[in-house]
Amino acid sequence: PAGCDIAEGQLVHAIVGAAHRDPRRHRDADDFDVRRTDQGHLAFSAGVHYCFGAPLARLEAQTLLAGLLRRPALISAGEPRWAPGLVFRRIIDLPLSLGGASR
Image (cartoon, rainbow, N blue to C red; front, side, top):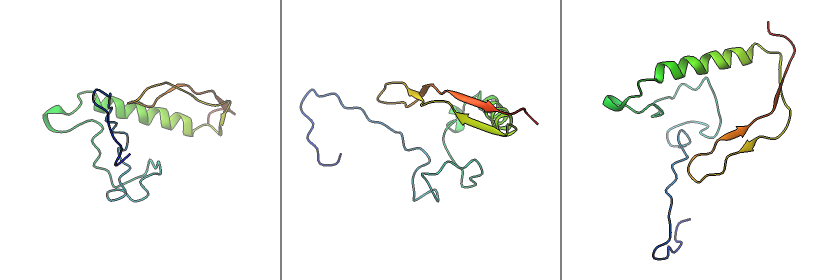
């Protein structure tokens, strides 16, 4: 937090976990909305550092979301289990139950 003291030799982690959550740039910044039109994100970098695998990652995400949306019900079957870590937040286990048959 702002104004806190850092002792000599103390380990400090700079965490950049607020991507796409800047309310000055994105309306409803805390909401996940796949239809968001105010893009301009840096998830795959830019310029000469642009991610070579970005088109494949987008195709995988589209395929996954399309498959999930064809199901009549996606039901939580338990609490997610999170990986410990200071920099990246990720789910290790997400128990889900897919109800009904695909259309």
